[in-house]
Image (cartoon, rainbow over all chains, first blue to last red; front, side):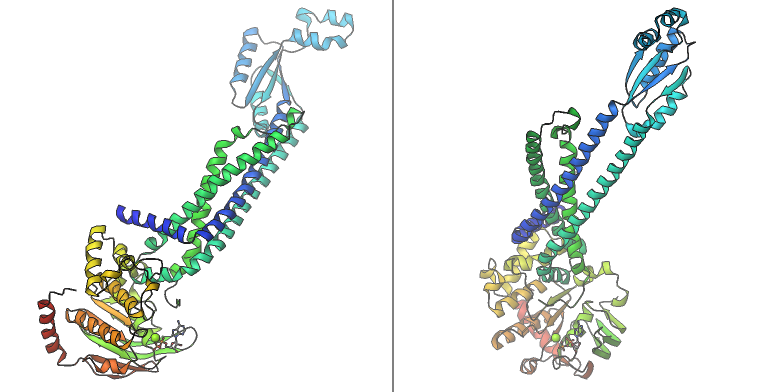
Length: 300
Length: 243
Ligand SMILES: Nc1ncnc2c1ncn2[C@@H]1O[C@H](COP(=O)(O)OP(=O)(O)O)[C@@H](O)[C@H]1O
Ligand SMILES: [Mg+2]
């Protein structure tokens, strides 16, 4: 399509939107509601995930080394643990410190006999992971490192957390998909009302030889306008609502604190604008395509 | 050239709109299609503009065998013809100028080409003062002239008019057919459906009569038409009118 034709069609799309401004307003309203619902489900999901992450960070594994390792080897193991992708932090607990921490429970004479070369406790690294979902992979990798004797962890907590997090991810994703589909359905039906009154125009355009693309273009423009407006306004609203929520619910327990909006502003902005435009354009085009296919039988 | 070969059209509702229609219309002819309401006149035109496909038989227009035409080709086929409707079918939210210009935008003409051509055609149809008006504020006769302007603006080789004078007063009806006759004299094929017999008798054109979906009479091309048309062409050229 030539650029002057595209310019004309963009202008037509804007003119049509203005011509049908009441219905445009209704569509934007519906779209904003759907985007807000979707956005809030996303934020709820993010917050639940955040809590899991917090809970997980308290969940560490202890890596016991072979007692025959030289100091250099111990340091090297520490470095390679630190270098692993999924490792958040590594803390070294030497066998002396280990004994000092746990030896109090032992009888004094036993304690003395364990000093120096006689210390049976292993050098140990306390490792915290970044992503709980990769727990099993990381565990296997550490267990296979040379010089590692044994890894001790709280298997139940880790696995339960992983399972629950997967479930939240699945449910959250499904809710978002369903909400987007519902938005699309409502938008299609809202726009259908205006397209019905424009079926005669579509017929006239086709009778003078307009291609499907030519007839569809202004509707795409209209969808983009509606989607962009709804996305922008919806984003402003969700920011305001979430911000006031955050101001009003301050929890003592840091585990329960809300994720700050600033941490999620980008995915939300992109999601709102992209989601709005996508639903707007699909809704607009789906609702008019029936009349595009119809050849005859249109009566004003 | 328009050709119908054993054309039948049965709508899904079961009504037999056309039965075994065989017909040949040459380039440059002017034909009236007459007949009672329900005789199949509109269906006949809809087959020509490929708004409907025949149930059986073959329709050929300007060497396009319409049953073979792909959906994507239809818009380009439509651009070779101008269509005039009884109910005008103007877009009420566009000015007179935009309604006419629209046909040219569809074809991708530039603003300047459109501007020049639309003003010329509006002037030809005595509508120059109305270009910024909206269709609902015009009389029936004026609206139909806008419809005619839209059909003419791309210089089509075929004009199809379905009862174009049905909602127009008698004097204006005569003027519109007169206008169509002059366009025809420049070589454009014109097919016009009407049930106004007085109107048909005022002009010497071929008359095809439909009844119950069949052609029951066809005067063929009047022999003297060509003579008249030569004179008239001279007239038109002398008057500086170029369509
Ligand atoms: N889209 C349609 N669907 C079903 N039946 C139709 C349709 N269009 C026309 N008909 C029927 O076909 C017959 C011929 O109609 P039409 O071609 O409109 O006649 P005319 O234009 O001469 O009045 C009529 O019986 C009419 O009811
Ligand atoms: Mg009819």
